[in-house]
Image (cartoon, rainbow, N blue to C red; front, side):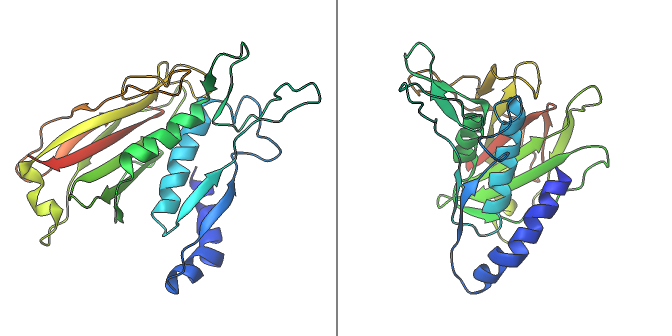
Length: 244
């Protein structure tokens, strides 16, 4: 994942940074997990969820206007739908509704946590933990923080995260008076190779495209505004801070 961020930095320096300095908005028209329709057992698995969520947030924090992920299905001569491994959703084989691929949950999670303008985030993590954080503040002054624990496998670790706010007259000075709710993105077995069992806010997306996920109370916010939360391996947690 760190190597991906290095590639993002190079692309941003060549194009995005130049446009941003001139105040010109830009977007990425074609965003792939892999080329040529995606890689089976990779682009159509839960690992693509963590990648897409992190990728989208990274670019949003770098002045991008939007990202178009590849999706859709190919149509054969017989009129049937062919595979598209990078697709966020496909038609059900029985023709009844749609089947949400894991990557769809990344896009849904992004819409829950990316409200308003990006905030600067500084992280200090253990060297063996693959972790990133992103934050936003909306027009009602609510603050949203997305925490992504990308560690997986036998050596995966739960991230014990402590959030502290910088002072200076901003929202951080008031956080001790605010309430905090959380929403978790995870696969039930924390299996990055899984193609099902993904939930956001405790719910799956139904074949009708409807989702009933919800926020739940997070830990106690101290008077200083600090809060500590646990983020399971191969998962993400969205925190929402709002005035009481």
